[in-house]
Image 1: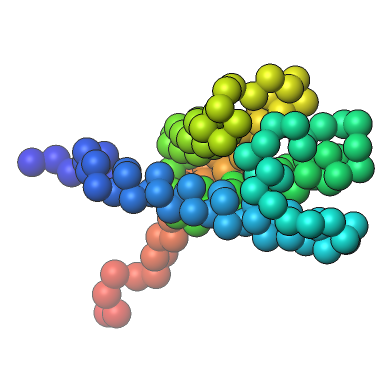
Image 2: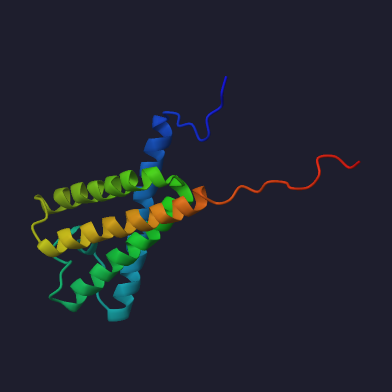
Length: 156
């Protein structure tokens, strides 16, 4: 019976718990980044900053700061992929899943799909950043050299 290096076993409970964990990381750190940005410009915090597509935009300072918070959040979530998912092959899957559920949340919150081009551009850029950086970090860990003991096998 041959053993397989990193054989993949179908574990739906693990996958669902990782999806839930990545959603928690996404919204927790997005809330922290938005709170930090809001403290800089002294604006009120609301769910509109997370779920309303009209807030994210190039036209207003608040919109640009919200975009910055979303981009910083994608970097934080890439660290979450590296720390909790640990598989380069799965980074794109979890990234798209997180942003898909965010789009569904925005759809429910606004009662229609986001219609702003800036919202779509920011989310596609955040998906790309999160997937590429997360995959890079995971691949670096996966490809780390395995230490081999070069000393003698026995002390003769």
